[in-house]
Length: 521
Ligand code: KIV
Ligand code: ZN
Image 1 (cartoon, rainbow, N blue to C red):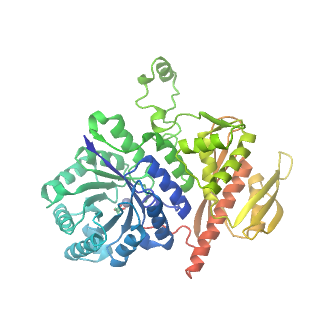
Image 2: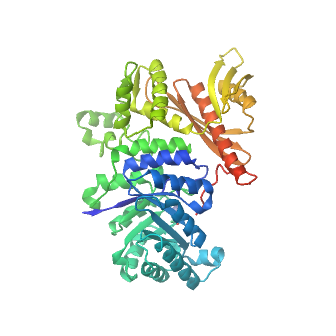
Image 3: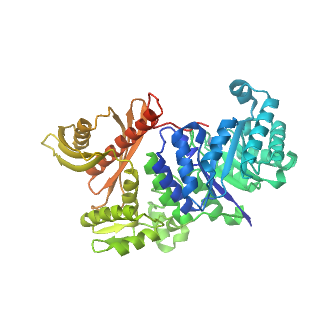
C-alpha cells in the first residue's frame, strides 16, 4: 500500500485567508499541534515577506523536531536565501520555490517569456539545491498552463535537482477528471518524473478542492497539500480532515495509508478556528458541530438499534469523543501534569505553574474540568504570551432596568496599576469602553463570537473577536466561565496583539502596523 505524504500549509496558505493572520506565538502553538497530528511536512511561512514570518518559520524549525519544516520562496535569489536562513536549523528542512507557468500570468503579471521563466525556475532550484537536497518546485497556475510547456518546466527543474514537483490548481479551476488527465499526461511526458515525489495543491473556488485532491490520489500522487478546516487564500484549500478521512474510511477504495493521528483532528480544527477567528460551519464534514448529530426519528431509531446504520465513522475516530470528565477541584499538581502529558503538552516549569493556577481557579467554579476546558485554558495562556497590559479585575453591573456599568483594573508591563469605569449599551460594551479609557488604542470591534466550550450551565464560554484599528485587523480570544470576563479577556488579547504588531512596525521604521501582514504568494 502506498503511503501518502500530508503537507500542511495552514500556517502559510491558510494564513493568507482574509483576516487569518497569526502571531509568532500562535504559529508555534498551532505548529506543535500539527506535529502532534502527525503531518509529514509543515509549511510554516514565506520568510522573505515579513520579519514576523521569518521569525515564526525560524522558531518552528528550531523547536519542532518530528516534522519537516518547509519555507516558501519566490524565484528571486534573496527570497531563496531568506527561506534557507529561516529553516536551516530544522530537521530535514525543505525549501519550496514557485514561479507561475500559465501564459496569462507570464504575459500580464510577470511580463516574462516562457524561456525566461524556464531559466528563472532552474536558477532558483539550483540555488536552493546548493543549500539542501530537500527542494520542492511548484508551477503556479499549473492547471491553466499549456500541458507541453509544463512538462518542459518540470523536466528542467527535476534536472536541476528538485525532489518534489507540485502541481497547483491555484485558481480552483480544474475538474476532477480533467485534473486526473493532466496528471497522467505529466507522468507520461515529463523527463525524470518517475524519480520524484509528485504533489498537488488544490484551491476551492468552485468547491472542488477535495474532489480534485482525491482524484489526484487515485492517479498516483504521493503528496497532498492541504489546510485544517480548508482555510486559505479566497475560498481556501483542500481540507486536511476531509481528504484524510476519505482515505481512512474508504481505504478499500483509495488503497493508501497516511501518518495522521485522526483522533487529533477535532482538537486541531478547534484551535485553528479559535486562533484565526474563523467559525466552522455546523454542517461541515468531519469537524462541524452537526457532523455526528442525528436528529430525525428514523435515524435515531437506527442508531439506537445499531450505530452502523447511520454512522460511517465514529466521532471518537476524529477526536470528537464528547466531554469526558477529566479532573476536579481536588485534583493536584501530579494529576494535572499527568493529564497535560496525556494531551501531548510539555510545559516549562513557569508555564506549568501558570496553567495550574488557572486550572485551580476554574475547578473552583466548575465541578468537572474536561480535556476541552484544559485546551481552552491553555489557548488563553499562550495567547497572553505578549502582555503589555494585563487585565486584573472586571466587575460589571447590569440588568433589564439598569444601565450597564463596568469597572476594570489593568496592570501594565511596568507594574503600574490603572482603574476606570464606564457605562455602555450592554455589559460587553461597558467593559470595552472601560478598557479603552486606559489602553488608548483606537479600535473598532467588527466581529464578536461566543460559544460554549463544553456542555452544562457551568461550562466555559469562548469568545473570539476581531478588531479593526488603523486599517489593520487583529483577532482576540478569551475563555472563562463568565462570558463577560471571557469577552474582556478576548478584547485585551486583541489590543495586546495590536500593540505588539505596532511595536514591530515601529522598530522597522514603518508608519503602519504590520499585524495583519499576510504572506501573499
Ligand atoms: O496556490 C498556489 O499556487 C500556491 C503556490 C505557492 C504553491 O499557493
Ligand atoms: Zn495556494
